[in-house]
View 1 (spheres, rainbow, N blue to C red):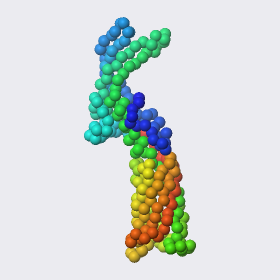
View 2: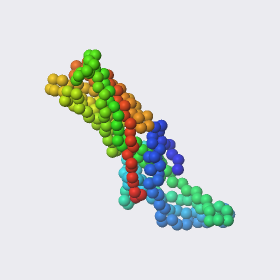
View 3: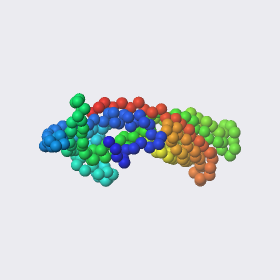
View 4: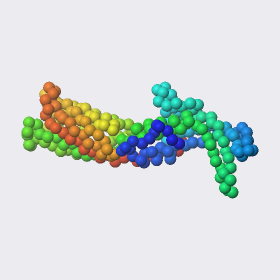
Length: 248
């Protein structure tokens, strides 16, 4: 099946695509013969094709795609158990190989478009899932070389179960905290805040990118008046989650 939707992007994990297509299920039901053309040796038939995605959400994907008009789902409908279905017509012709082989010509554009769109949503939802670990390095405040105002390098980590949002938390040398809310798209952005006391507070902003499983971002820590206190770099590596879905 081919569609303009669902193609992998550079840096996507190929295992996600393989998992989606391996765990998606397509079944053909209520197949009936409509006619036979003896000149071409073709049998014309009709059937209902059911499809389900690994997370059991094909119906929800269809409703979302229909509401927002992302794709033309044509005759696809929501079926029992959250699956989808489309009534199709197809032709069967003997391949004349002397064995039990035949040609099948079927047209189901709605399901093809929906599967491509479902694949795209699946990859987007799980491409950042896993354990992220690395280092957070910042320069000293006003040239300080040691102590609480000096430069630091800290090991940091966080986990993502699904989606592209993460929270990075660390403790400071002065006994305070810092929290950064990260958005892990193809581009990375992070905004946060920290404090050592009621009078020692700051903000953080980071920008960067993810290349495969490697994250790199740079930014600044500023005081509440907007003065730059530290220049920072965040480098992390993803250990992808071991996703496991049973066929629905």
